[in-house]
Length: 112
Image (cartoon, rainbow, N blue to C red; front, side, top):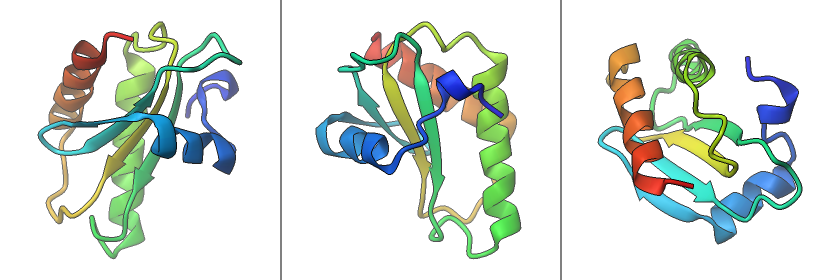
């Protein structure tokens, strides 16, 4: 679980990331990054897994836990931007290693 200061919790904040943020595509997922994080000095994350990934909630929750573990265990919190992590249209369960590679790819690509 992310700390409260590192979570995007409000629907308005997530909508702003989708509306004004940049879309980045990684090998297994899509990431939306919004650099105009004026209010907070922390990087804030939201994880969204669509039903197209899997119709079974257990699988969607497992991949959410994996994503949160990757983000929590690494030092991605100094980027100072809002990031929405999304995985859709995929029936294969992702491994910890694949998710870590995707998020590393994203952080190196955006350099916010």
